Image (cartoon, rainbow, N blue to C red; front, side):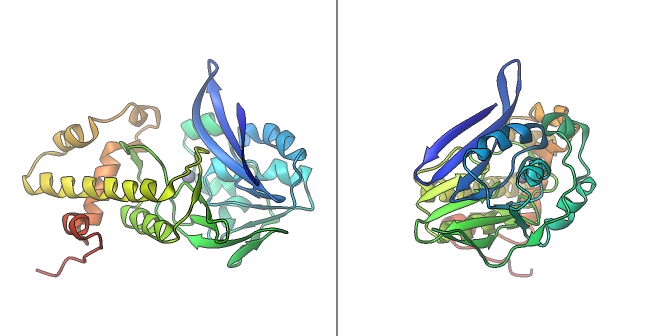
Length: 289
Ligand SMILES: [Zn+2]
């Protein structure tokens, strides 16, 4: 399933694999001025190519190495061999050798397996199109190699998966709390006026959304610290703060779980005091006891 939305000069291309006609999980690519940001999953690459054939593609960039962002590159490269493909240096090895993803079965079933693309160039500090100039912003946390793209004149932010809306109830063990919160703070400091996230759900009021997400994660970390101090067992903490383990833990063989999310909070709490940060709005490093 592909859904197109026009946002002025930007076309949002939302993609989802469906089950019984219902979308399972949305991911997105964005097109502007001959530039394609992200390439969707392997299983929807042919449909994506049909869409962007009408728009024209001169260059392609990706935000990170997950299969729902790099998965269309092989098919796009075959259809648009002249288009340059660029990625962060840390992302390139996974594009050229996608077996590095170590995809679990559920990921192969949901998205398909990416095929290797060898002609990938490293990104510089910016991406230039005829009409726009996008800065590359490092945003680790969701993955180590994650980057975002910011157009300062339009104040457009293409955030990939650095911002994921809604309330988090399960994390992958790959996600890292300090990077996630720091990256969200960095993105908020850019004062974007339009947020184009990896879900394709475009935000017209990005700042409250970004600050709301930071507050949500800090609050969770603070609550974990509080319950840990009471000596509460993990199962009870997960039940209280996440409503128990969600079904995604079963479907992903434990790759995503509430337990991972709680452990990510604990690693954050080893260094920072989220209660103080919430009160003062700035990170405070714990002093040594
Ligand atoms: Zn991702």
